[in-house]
Image (cartoon, rainbow, N blue to C red):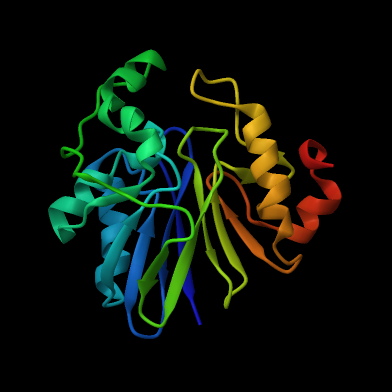
Length: 214
């Protein structure tokens, strides 16, 4: 059975997740921590629970989801695993922070980006995530799906009652709706969805109540 701990980080209130199982192997997903104090809270959870961090996963590479990747690399020697389609976002994080009028980054350098691809299995302990490509919010948006645990980590693809913004230059509203309809909504209603911002939801709830995908 998976154990999941959520941390809300940075000025954009990103949900960073630590997902582990009984083997103590774990993944960190979207470590958007913007300073040492935020990272210390997350790292203390990892250390206090004796977790063995195996993967650093990102649902997409907007600055608010990757700010803390350098902390993970510094302390655990893990590279960032994300979509190559978002490479320019990853490489130009400082320009994007400036564009949004946010303070300069004061975090360790970002590690190398290790590309992931659709249907790839990312294994840890007795579990694995399947990568599902969901471009639209960004070109390289992905979700991580664990069928056995009926769990989807949706990033900014899907929120409770909403979807990710598609008014950025790299966004594509039609592509996002297509990915939701043809991939995400085909998952079982019982699937729990952990979102990149805000509360959790389920596929069944979104199928009935989400106005963007009716």
